Image 1 (cartoon, one colour):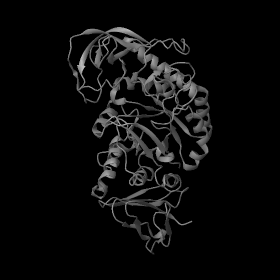
Image 2 (cartoon, rainbow, N blue to C red):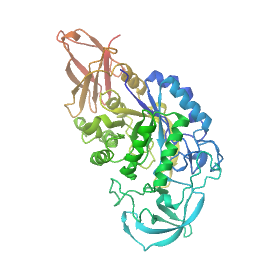
Image 3 (cartoon, helix red, strand yellow):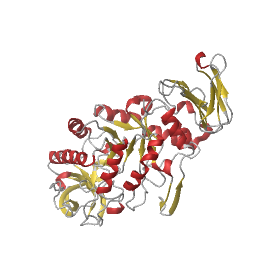
Image 4 (cartoon, rainbow, N blue to C red):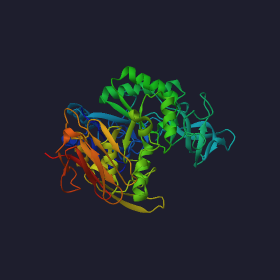
Amino acid sequence: MINGTILQYFHWYYPSDGSLWKKLQQDIPYLQQLGITAVWLPPAYKGADGGHASGYDTYDLFDLGEFDQKGSVRTKFGTKDEFIAATDACNKAGIAVYVDVVINHKAGADEREKVKVIKVNPDNRTETISEPFEIEAYTKFTFPGRKGKYSEFIWDFHCFTGVDHAADLNEDGIFNIMNEYGDTWEEVISNEFGNYDYLMHADIEFRNPAVREEIKYWTKWFYDTAHFHGMRLDAVKHISPAFFNEWLDYVGANLPDQFMVGEFWTGNVSEIETFIAATGGRMNMFDAPLQYQFHRASKEGNSFDLTTIFDDTLLAHNAPLAVTLVSNHDTQPLQSLEAPVEPWFEPLAYALILLRREGYPCVFYPDLFGAEYTDKGNDGNDYTITLPAVEKIELLLKARKDYAHGDQYDYIDHPNCIGWARSGDAEHPGGCVVIMSNSEEGFKDIDLGKDRAGTVFVDFLGNKEGEITLDEHGHGRFIAPAGNVSVWVVKA
């Protein structure tokens, strides 16, 4: 039995030096040692900001760092050849590759077009605040640098539902495009802002059958080029479930054994469950509500009731589809969904996703490697952010690989001190006992069975000195250090 663990192998502020794909190849032995079984890679195609684009400003899905477009041949992360070399190396090492798929919108159009629009209230996109009128908008994508290689499809205003800029008027806003597929937004699950179909840039019109076919064609081309094992689907909150049902059925029929995980960022687990129902459980989902819980718990300290840590999370409601995380590129400081977990609580949060039976955990790049960057805050001032690696993160990952196996027995029964025991399995017979406190030192009296009588345990993390020896009944009192976590394993 191998415990699967994803590493999000990037962050928003990774340097724009074209080094990421090469670094991934170099890091593969290290990742194997830690028990990383899959890497989620950033968008590999050209963004509107060229060699500086993080990829979420999708320009050309077919340009993996091959063509001179947007002022650069390579992407922020490297060239096409380096990307393919990295995915090939991961494949040979037995590390699955999950690619980031950003198909909600496109940015950096090559030409303007005259389009008929209705301006809507940004706070309620179902409320029109103008009569239909004509603007010039950046909605035509011809990809002159690629010259039709791989695909001759031209994106124009028939492919989009809305834009946020009238170029001829030099006016920002949200403009609903009126085309033959409808003069309203597409139906999505979230009713935030009335209808949250529109997110940014030129919003893709999935009611256009030519668009759907082009995305299917690109998906198969991308797989045949890079041989990945799964996809992280960006901004599914803003895309019609009807599109996903058609597209994911195509993926299932044409691409072998793909793992799919969607990003529907909300603190409301019922919205995620509604999306899961609408898409027939075709994809896993990130447990955003659990990440919010970690953020809250880290801020509230010992006033947070640890027995409620899983309340109203996807892990509690639908664990088989839950991909768990502590942080990601959107929640890191100075980003749009900023909700960082305080450093003191990060080891506890990682223990909660790495060492329990439920969920498929995803580790964030800076939490393993650290990061430092400077960007502007909401007040317009520059801030330098330093994110050190999470304390004992390597040991927590190794504990997942070597000890967190078998049945699970919970002791989630005290607001400031909780724990659980893992029984181990045939390949990992020792198991482990995990105890954590968000206050003063705590303990749990745990019965591991008479057959374990006399077994000696030590803290694998080294947070608590000494040994714990089970009595003749297999009972032991396991300690949690103040404001920290211990992972008790059988003494070697």
